[in-house]
Length: 249
Ligand SMILES: Nc1ncnc2c1ncn2[C@@H]1O[C@H](COP(=O)(O)OP(=O)(O)OP(=O)(O)O)[C@@H](O)[C@H]1O
Image 1 (cartoon, rainbow, N blue to C red):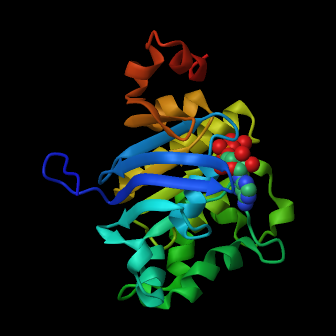
Image 2 (image 1 turned 60 degrees about the horizontal axis):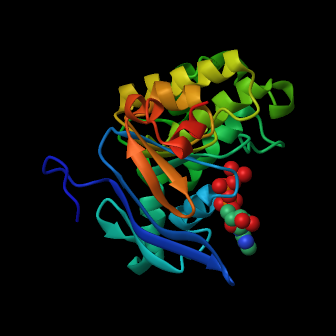
């Protein structure tokens, strides 16, 4: 177990390898995410970022390596333990992924109804939905259908839904992709505010240099399936290394 100032990581990926036939995509990738830390992973298109996320959330089986969430190796957990651990993780998918046939309210109620055991004393579904929408400034949109929302509003509703179970870890897959620069900035600031309020730790996959600058405590560059470079935004963006420089153009 790696220790940083005697604190264990909330999420630890060690020596993660994933191949498809002869094609080795991840060749020993490592990430440690510490409490309340925001780690950004940047990599070129096709470098294996989505594969890494899929291994992390159990949608894909790694060829080898270990993934620990809150010190528990997910490969040896039973279904009940795994389901409970999943409620500790919020996931903002690429492109929002709202249920089109449900209103905003129903989209937000969905994870609450599935995980009733996570509700604390006195917390009602109604109050939690309101609190989540207040966090993203969209209480007025509660009875709208996703088709009535702009792209930025959809992303904000998806953010509210990902945070509604108050997860301790958030995974963001390209949170600003497809948004205009001003809306992207609004989403980045919302992510930061909400995380400050709830003390969430976040792993953020992005190509967006502005997003990485504003939100990251640390950045990892994924190149050829391994950690190519790691450091703060200031350290990496001022690097003289030609490969590292390409990420910050
Ligand atoms: N199910 C699969 N079967 C075979 N190859 C796959 C599969 N999923 C991903 N790959 C391959 O793994 C490599 C990494 O893909 P991945 O989707 O992780 O890239 P990415 O870094 O997320 O790219 P982008 O930034 O464009 O989303 C690609 O070469 C892709 O073709």
